[in-house]
Image (spheres, helix red, strand yellow):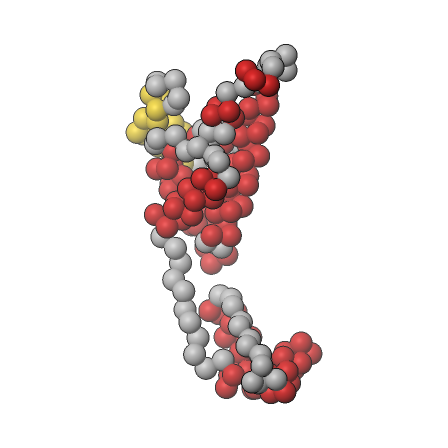
Length: 171
């Protein structure tokens, strides 16, 4: 409450030189605004952002992967959408949209590194390493969800051009 009182005081004192943006989930923002009578008149025009849909979440993931030089093989995007949907359902109002996608990407990057390192021949020379292989995500890099088992009946084509029926299960 002290911080809110200080914010209200600063907003009055520096009203021509300060811009205050408060961001949060709707319920929490109402609680924040209602915590001090001076806030309601200072935050009169809220801007509401809708949650991102699965295609938008997938685009964010692809953009992050592209920026960092990672590859998404054909077919993996559909499994990512299923995974994002599952995580969104599990986390409910705590789902952080792009922030959650960033965390999923970081986890997948770690899973990819573990997978590649565990399969790597330590006697191989660096010029013999296939960079595409160590930068390409695979289905097994997608983290499991703590509460769901996702079953996918359509085949997934891997880099060896073989079709596999996939079931994503808990670890």
